[in-house]
Every structure is written in structure tokens, then in C-alpha cells.
Image 1: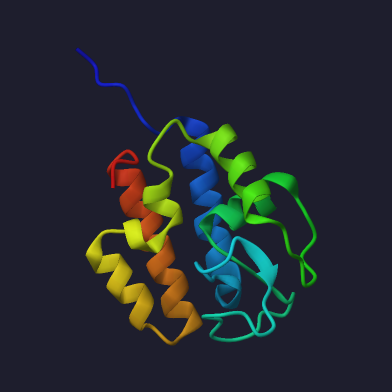
Image 2 (image 1 turned 90 degrees about the horizontal axis):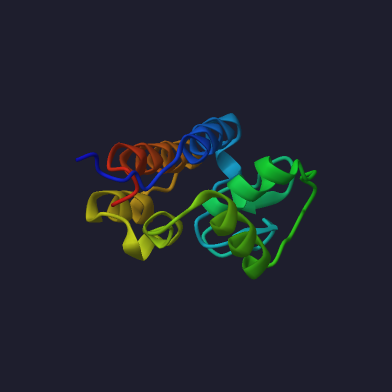
Length: 136
């Protein structure tokens, strides 16, 4: 009997786009906010040229909507409602909240002080989520 997949092809495709998005400008990756003006933002390591910081869910929303980035802010509720409804059946919080990340990724994210390293941790976290079919 085949097991039911948690992540469909569209979700995996979007997560691959997010990985690329994070690596294109590592300074905008900040798991403390959905989509926010990066100036003075908690946990912001360095300022991205666009002035916008985002988490994984925020990156999904930005890519999905094609919104311009110029000190952009979007409410967390709007981001979450849009992304979860479109891309996830379950367990989305395992990816969107660092407190739910496997310890290895959680500690690495919290301890890095370099934007490129932080983006690489985000990319690796997404890869692990895909490899486990969204279970962890």
C-alpha cells in the first residue's frame, strides 16, 4: 500500500524557488518575521539592498505574489493564510517556526552571525523538510 505524501509537487517546486531566493540575497533571510522592513528588525544581521526581510513563509508569499520589495511589510496572518492554504496539508509549523526545527538546524540558525551562513542553514532546513516529506 502506497503511503500518502505530505508534500505535493507544487509545494516542493515552491520550496526549491525559496532556496534559490534565499541564496540570491542572504541578507533578507530572517526567521523572526514574515515580511517586514528590515531596518531595526530583531535578529537582522545586515541590511539587504531592498530593505525587506522575510522568513521561509514570507519568501513563499513574495515569490507567489510577485510583490515588489522596497521596505515591504505584510501581516503575518495574511502571509500564513495565503501560503498554508495553497501549499500545505499539514505540519507547516515544522518549517515556519524555528522552535519546531530539528535541534541541529535550530542551534545553527541561532548561533550564526553571517547572512550567507544563515541562508545556507535555511536552505539546508528546507532540504531536510523535503527529504522527510514534511514530517520534520
